[in-house]
Image (tube, rainbow, N blue to C red):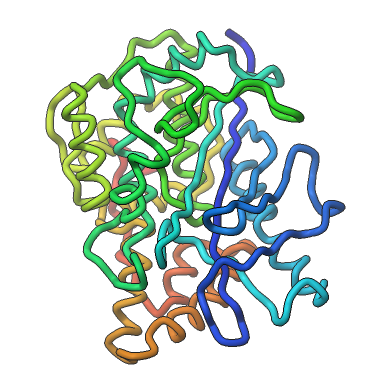
Amino acid sequence: MTRRISLGVEVEACTIRLKNMHIGRHLMLPRRGLMENEESYHHDRSIGIEYSSRPFYSIREALFGIKTGLRKSITAHKLDRTRANGDYTLFFAGTWRDRFAASHFHVGLGTDGMEFEDATRLCRHLHSHLPLLVALMANSPVYRTEITSRDSNRFLYARDRFFYPLEFGDLDQEYREEMTYNRDRKKRTPTLEIRPCDAGLPEYVAAGLVIIKAVTMAWLARRPVANVNRHDLHLKGGLNAARHGPTACLYWNNRRLKAGTYIDKFFREYDSFLHRMDIPAEIFEVFRLFKLGWNGAGILRRACELHQRRHPRTWQRYFAAGYVPAINALLRGETLTTFIHSLGLRPPVTKRVYLGGRKW
């Protein structure tokens, strides 16, 4: 197979109203003239906003394209005051009240998409790595406006409704499963869709694409499936990932591993393919932070707890007031580390953190 791997994402988002710092589900749709070919915004019935990207062929292109695409909603909305009373900005979390926001990944081959037989084969390679994706992208520590110890409340409360777990090797066109085959739709080629991950910041979405692309490259190179777990361990690994994120115990060929050790093993297993990708430095920072116990949920939880200690009754407004400039700067091109500092947090030093025994 010589066709290039095409990658796409769907990212759902909540909103923050700037007038009163209320986190809700306002609909922010930019004008169609701002959209690139195959890029779109939709009204999602559950959460409000759903951004669908165009196809990407490199990780660097994906990170830039996702940030640019999401920023269009904010920029266009500020320019068009007739759409709502007051300005809004985007807020990324898998849950906040009682609705669920997700990041969905799409994989195709070239401009023709992916045949069902190919999608089924790729599904086998990706299946046992799904708990890693859940742990890495967990971003819903707040549920019904209460701060919890769980990293992905969305996974724990919505899995049976929106992304039911599959047996190894199973794949069909049922959209409520953790992986599904999307047949050719209007203006969209058929793809394999991966559904269990929380809505996240662009850097975390791009990090998820790194994992998916590395596994896809190994499949195209006719490598054997690297990780196959029993179904009960697949289920257990997913629950562990949702509860504990970067400190979870996951499974590799039925062997229990800490999430940080799993990341190292993944980087060693797919080393040659990762070296062939154009991966920005800030994406490696995502993986280094993960090894030190930080993911999207950890960032959100720490920021919320900081304001809850200072302002017990009105902490949500103070948190939102700090989040607004931080997310706007991130979408304009600032780094994840700057975003964390903007929330009033001190991220750990990652200079001596190696991935798979290498300093990437």
